[in-house]
Image (tube, rainbow, N blue to C red; front, side, top):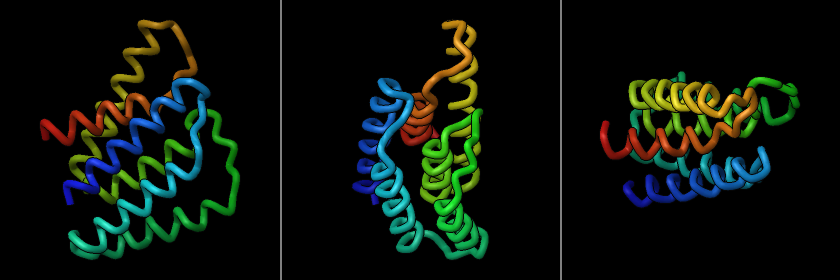
Length: 131
């Protein structure tokens, strides 16, 4: 199981680097993250209808292109994968930390558009090691 957490951390690192450089990253990273999260959830977590429903909603959403202007669709894919991997409480902390880091960085850098994946990856590492 720790190998999968390491793999997810590595994927998040590459996603963060690509997002910081180009404001986008390959969908292949998101698919790998979702596959790893689903495998860990299937093998090690109790099965709940909520999580199965989230996976189905994610799969259905891949057919639509909502053009969200406030968050990238890759960020939403990463959040869903991390939600499956971490569970509710650690994911809530991840969401809080990544959003707080993003807000602080936007105020310091005076930018309205920032790549969000570096904040998600940093928060994941914080959650993994300290919570």
